Length: 519
Image 1 (tube, rainbow, N blue to C red):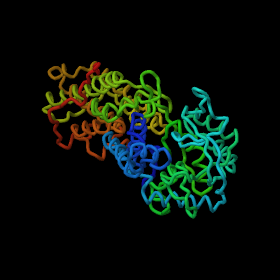
Image 2 (spheres, helix red, strand yellow):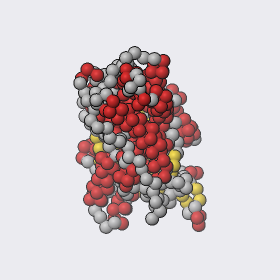
Image 3 (cartoon, rainbow, N blue to C red):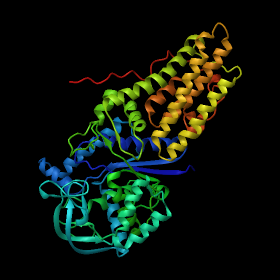
Image 4 (cartoon, rainbow, N blue to C red):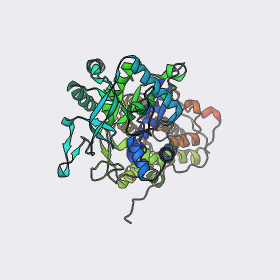
């Protein structure tokens, strides 16, 4: 049986439509999941919407809507985005679903059985926008002396009866976790932030609210609903069947990696492992906090800033795969990155249209024209052929998989485009268009060599641009079983030469994009 691999996005808070930051996280997680499937692993990818909490209730009320009706609509926009961006998730979990309530209550009871929950009175600073509690020492002063959270969001003094989780009990176990598993939190800058926070001392955490009722009811405690982050984090369990222990949960838990934004690392790297330790459940192997996608002026993008770009509009305007490629090529995964429409056009035209698309078009057109559309044979190699095979083989078999395994997504693309450039240098140097009359066997060898390398490169980039890569592989007649990293391998012969495959008239893969114009 193939090796299991479980990956999740953060669970999106749908009090507004999805923006480019959501798209980035969905696309990156999807590319990793697709890569792992192409490595032969049995993959589960879970995403969804985190629909509870005061912020959702207030947003719905301000819009004059019933909260569930509002959540239904807003959650649908995230499903729509996932479909539009070719996201291959296995489960889309809504926290308002009954099966998720059952999982959250099972986790609560497990923490209660460990004597880690007690009833007390909460008095402290709370940010509705962040759905987070903050200590006095964490607050910053805004205009007019207003107190703000470290994220710059307003906080309000809250007093109510609350269930508390004994987070302080888990300070030393968490420090031991970070010490014994240095890769539990990545990248290292996030690990250092969390380490400093935990070393500074942990206070018990308020984990229920009585001031509103839009949430998962606390078992055996009428009037209390769970703190939204207890409920949201449990999605990683409910998405694979918890509290049922057999089936997918038994096979896939613990998660290999949670892909999240850097602003919610504390919840995932401190609260979440503490909850799991309390419940007696294994911990995820890794939490990866990626950076923000910033506007051209360097500002963080989001609903509250009023500068959130619509990813569906961008994908429709420039192409889904062009949009996916740009984000994973342009931004070093784990760091902040910026975007602009001009940058999307420039990158897509230079690398997808001109470098890879034109390489495929020139090669297949030569085969179609000069080989009667049949795949040419190789009539012995020379040093140039062997060097190109070695470059592309090393890239597809080693460099790209190693980068993906390390979650170094932009480095995977960098290795790929370097190999594409090597193919372009080869075709220019060998000039097969001039060999038909002087050395037709050499022409066939050059074109066959390019055909194989292009197929390998299409497989190598397929996790990032799946639709375009598979369209090209279809046109090239590459069998589905070869469209994996093991399947494409190091082919020193045309894998379909004996299949009597014949090319159709080649068509361009990536249309050149036009620069945006000022309205």
